[in-house]
Amino acid sequence: MTEKAPDGAYDAWLNAIENGEGHYLECENGHGWLPPRRVCPVCSSRDLSEKSLPDSGEIASHTTITVPTPQFEDDAPYVTAIADFGPVSVTGLVRGVDPEEVAIGDVVGVEVGERETTGDRAVVFRPR
Image 1: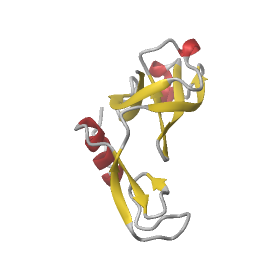
Image 2: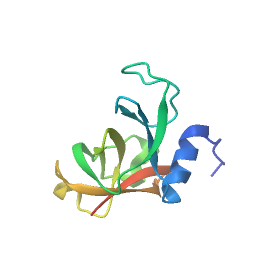
Image 3: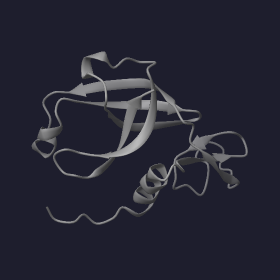
C-alpha cells in the first residue's frame, strides 16, 4: 500500500484524540466548531478558545452501508454516524456493536481506528 500524504489539521486532530486530548473550538458566545477555525462562522467572533471534547457523545443520526464503493468493500457492512459531543457534532464509524443494534440516542466514546480496506485512520465511536 502506498503511503498517504498527511492531511495537516485533520491528522493533528486525530493525533490529539489518540493522545486523549480531543478538542473543539468555542467562541465567546458558546458556538462550538471542530478545528481548524480562525473565525466563528455563526457570529464572526475571532475570540476562539480550545475546549476538551467531552468523554462521551450521543448518536444523532446514522446509516448502515451494506453496498459500499470498491474503496471500502472490506469494511462493509459498516455504520457511519453523527454524534453530538456538547456543542459540536462529529462524524465517524460505529464499531463494537452489531450494525442492526445502533440507535439514535446511543451513548458513544470517540477514538481513532483504521478502515479495513484502505488502512486510513478514521474517527471511531464505541458504545459506552
